Length: 358
Image (cartoon, rainbow, N blue to C red; front, side, top):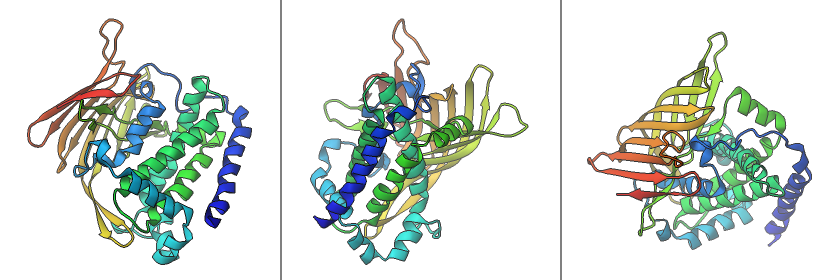
């Protein structure tokens, strides 16, 4: 209870600060109301499905979201957050900082700081700013407070799903929630930071198109992803391209005068995650080669194609709403070709999760 009393004033201070600063944001940086592409699908529900269940992209995780031990996950994450000092003391403060916070460890089972900076700080910061834009664009009162509350609640959900049925210390939850998720929201609350990442790095959310099978309630084709494009000096129309999420790709992007762009990246996909220390829930990630092709319009992703090696999904194609029109309708769709030769596909819209067919 004493730990709660110490944490609660910090949370209240952040929420009150966000409320006071509501009037200072005037420009839309990461959500502008586009009716096409990945931006047309951006909303709190799809964010919840893409981010909250990001972990189920691993082949070994069940897609049936009704079967997860939410009670155990919520409770264990909460216990680590209510009393963070105890788990860190038992883990070791130097181990905590070198593996979770500072870039001092580089082995596969010790470099948890890398996804922390990439996904939780930068990706989480963009998510906070994009949600603020979305709430403000749709005329909600207190958009910053709503964005912060939505983001942190879904971040908690994500940690709980990842926790599964594990019971015990987990310092990664502490670093994720208190340092990087919170830090990302604070960092991207500054106009100068949002302007730099939006205008200089073309930072964008290029998440997938989450879809449900009926009646089994299996969540398919979900995952939160981000892209950056940095214009190379003295080389017109060519950008360095960086794409990250469960996959990390680097490459080049070519931008046409129309605002359309094509990009290609090569890199690695996280293909499996396994625990290396059951006492602390520390894990290691296995990787496999991955290749991606992308077409976007004004930084809103219109279509993507992934070729993955040594994962269950060999080819994955996503076509977002707005690329093809049928009268007044412009649905999106996706197709996955699996290693065993079987196919799966789904139909999506910009206003609700899609329907998947096996």
